[in-house]
Length: 223
Image 1: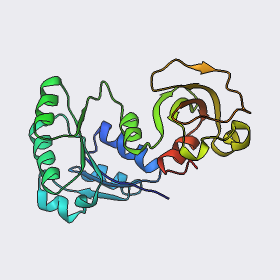
Image 2: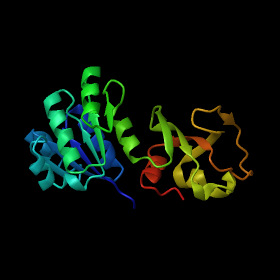
Image 3: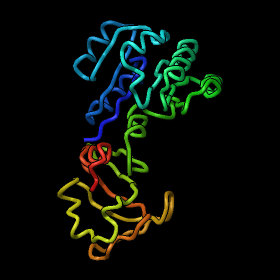
Image 4: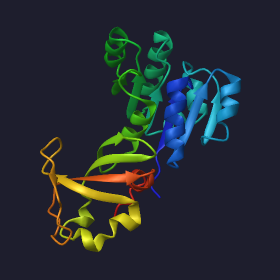
């Protein structure tokens, strides 16, 4: 199993959504917040839920945040806290820092001090941000209803040259391939022949049920 260690600083509505989605796919999450009731609630959801100040670099080191590959600074309503948290993450060597911003001015400031990516709750849902952190082959997901999604994903190397009929994709991943694209955003070609070997470097498009296919991709199990 290939897991990532992700820090989530701030457990407001957005931060909780990110932490829940990451945990749902069996990732290790260190979640930090100043509200004891929220930290207690997430103690059984994430790997480690800690009560503390995200602007304190020594505290972040003490809880093991320096071992994270990615940190999400989810306290977008307080610019000072976000700025200090990002600066602390940079000082302790976090490779990827994703920060929430409530408006365009905040976004410019957070990029200016070193955030890798700045997101807006109006534009990016917590589920979307978590998916972007975890994905290996998936290019995009459109969530429909009743746990059904349309997924665009890069063909796994181990599938190249094989036929859909021999890959048992529906049985393994609860995924039905409905088409292909030559590149991301390219024209969708329907009616894929299940008995034609799959070429390299294409985008496959499928309809998936629940989170089965996502989980296989996020854990890098697509073989």
